[in-house]
Structures are given as C-alpha cells and as structure tokens.
Length: 574
Image 1 (cartoon, rainbow, N blue to C red):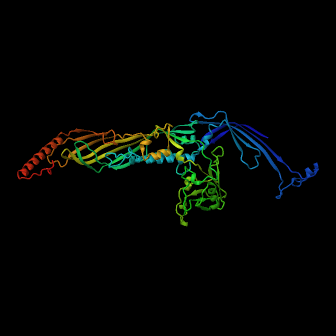
Image 2 (cartoon, rainbow, N blue to C red):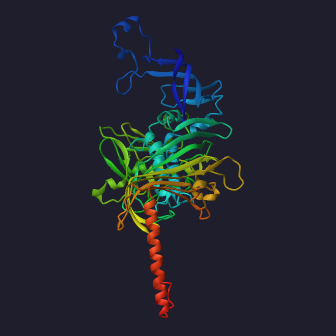
Image 3 (cartoon, one colour):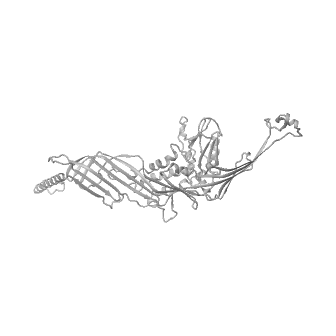
C-alpha cells in the first residue's frame, strides 16, 4: 500500500499553466505467486530453488501476476492575469490495474468553467498570430496607408511602414525563434517571452474567450534610404531638384490592441471526418504529382509521403503509416501539454531507434530523386518540424478555420508613423525668378495615421474576426474607422544666387520652410506653407530687379511685335 499526500507540481491545463497543491495518490499493488500444485514442506522451501517451486512460462520465468489499483486526487489552481479561475477544482486519475497497460480515466470536479482552455495549444496560437500579421501587411493597400507622402519620391505610407514586419519581429520572433516550433506551452510562458508587448491576459468564461492586450509603443523595423524630392508647392520656392537622400525610420504603435481567441468547443474530429471539411472548409492542400512531405526517422531512413486520393482523416493516418513502411505511427490524440484527451491532434511517433533526428521536411529536400516541392500540407497539419524525441505533436485538426477563432476587439487601434531626416540637403532651384543653390541644408518630417477597428454593420458583439478583417481589406470602411493622415515637414536651406552675376555680398542667407497638411488623404485640405527669410533682402531685391527687367524687356518686345502687325503674344513668358 502506498498512500502519498502533500503532492505539489506544475501542470499545463491546455493553454494555461496550473499548479497542483496537496495532491494525494493511493496505490494498492499486489503480486500473485503461482506455486506448483501440491503441498510444499518447510524443508522444500528452504532447499529448493524458486524455479522448482513456482509455475513458469515458456521462457522459464515464474508466472507472477502483478496487479494494483491507483487513484490520484489532484487539487488544481489556475491563475491567469492575476485572476484565479478555479474554485475547489480537482483532477482525478483512476487506474483499476496500473500494470495493465491502459491509460488512466481522467475526471474533473468543479472544472466546467476552465475546460475550454484545453481547446487551444501553442502551435495553433502561433498560426493565429501569424495570420493577424498577414492582415496587418495587407493594410498597406487601404486608403490611409496607400497615401503618397510628399518629399519622398512618391512613396506611400504603407510602403514606408511595414506593419507585418514590425508585428513579426516584435511578437512572433521572440516566441518562435529561428524555427517554427513555439518556445512556449502556456499563455503565461508566452507573456513572459513578450514582457514589453503583452500587458495583460484574461479569460472571459462567459464568452469562452482568451483575451490578450498588446502594447507596442513606437516599435521600429529597419530604416529606409530614399531620394529627397521637392514634389509639392512651397510658396516662392519652385523648380527645386536635389540628389540628397532621406533617412526614414518607420514605426508602429499598437497601444490599444486586444486579441481575442475563441475557446468554445468545436465539432469532434474522427477518422471519418473528410479532409475537405478541415480548416473552415479549406481542407489540406494536396498535390497530384509530388510527395506532400518527407518524414525522416531516427534510424536514418527518409520516406516521401504522397497523399493523393486521401479523403478522410482515417485514410490520412493510414497513408502515413503505410508510406513509411510502418516506421511511423500516426494517430489522433492529445499532446502531453494538454489536459484531457480531445482526440483531435495529429500525433506522429517514430517506432525506430538511432541517433538521427525525427522530423518532417518539404519534399524539395529530395532533389536527387527529381521530386519538386510539395504544397503546404505539412504546415497545415502542423508537422513541419524536427525533434530529438520520438513524438511530433501536430496541429489540432479542426473543422473551423483558425481565422474564424481569433479576433480583434472593436476599438483596437493600429498607428503607423514614419520619421524622415535629411542631414545634408543640396539642391538647385528658384526663389521667385532668381536661380539659387542650396548646400548643407537640413530637413525633417513626419507622417502617420491611426486605424481603429470597428464592427461590420450594426452588430454589437464587441469583436471582429480575422476572417472579417481579411474580407474588409477590399472595403476598409466596413471594419475600420475613416482615418486622417497628417504630415509635417521643416527645412533649413542655406542659399546662394547661381550665377551671382551682380556680385551681391551675401551674409549667410537662409530660408526656413515649415509645411504641414492636416490630411493627405483628401484634396479638400490646403497645405499650410510658411517661409522665413534670414539675411535674404539682397536676394529678394535681386529677384525684384530681375523680374522688373524681364517684364520691361517683354513689354518692349511685345510692343515691337505688335507694331509689326503680329498679334501672337501668348508665347512670351515672364
């Protein structure tokens, strides 16, 4: 009899970390010793070897029968975002015969509110974050982000600010590293990997949603080097050309963005489930003329796996086993990180042994066999990975698509900004009618916008699914509030008259330019331009003199032509 109390250890309950406190295990093992028929004397017990007294099997070993029941009661506490989700909750494990090779029966007490936490694992969560990043990348085409930014040679705000790159580098890279396998098993571990990005996590039991607040302030992603262009009106300044370069620093602020993961129960996946019904009806991408992927096992062998003609989940499992010559078993089950067997994860087990790595690769790795790269079946199944163990836990096979089960909370905001600096402005142009050159000037500017998520139509659920956000890229006003795109630019331009034919004694003349537009998106707003001249009186006088002389010369020419009976005067340009 083993009666152990006071057990304590950590336990992953689906996507959440839990703690077992004061658990108990009652184990009652028993051994049945099969003596040979007949009476056995004390002398025989003392002098006869055990093999001579006991019944044995064909291998000559005693036929002992070992039995024993096991009952474990494990009080469970789950705390998420500072809130305790459990109340007198416990997990029970029951085995009638611990030596019978069967799995324990798992039971729960007072756990109904947290059972949905089992419906999300780290691989699916990463896929959903990756899908959200792709949607952010698609925002470059919406009106506000497609606005052309002045002074930057026709570049748009969406081209300047790579929202997807910022998302991936600040959120995905820290939790996946250089590979595809998540570096976390629970949402608490995810938050610890993103201390500057994830500010809060909470589980809303009523709606069965896991919410995660993201706060990225001025998150940058690389720098751009672009040509400076004077492509907008600047008052008396005109015709300016420059070969200078502008250093642009793009950034994004996700200061009020809340992700919501739907943890509600889904339709059970069985061997009879059609592959075409998985992932919201998208199915699994298959190829008619190439292996979908290659499985490498620990004894060094490699097996191309082709899924042509596979129609159901059960057929998929059978095909993987047969294509690997039974070196790999494929089954539906639950990874060890998930409490309870939901029987809808794809589990691969390497049945061989050796020092090689167990993994799945694209079929392009078999270049010597002439096979081409297969489609994305391995990614869709979540098995494109490698491991030092004998088990690969694939993605949960679901009939709903991941894009249907992650959303943004209405009111979430995405701000994109680009700061531009030119430390050496060299240019030629005109001030009024006077040709001037600029050397060693400076310029700086900023442009940005804020996009706010809204629910389509008059709905009031409080959430917008990733699928709806993706559809909204074609009609942004259905899921985003109309955004303004303000922009500013300041320049300090030292100028010289070129050529200085009248030998002006100039004292470091300079033009300070302040330009702003409250909304680049619309032509109904007029940019504000302010020019401040420093030590420019002689230059402006020269512009006046040259302008007056040109007017006088033109009038004289016009009078001469008119006196000759020529009425064409529109070609004379001041």
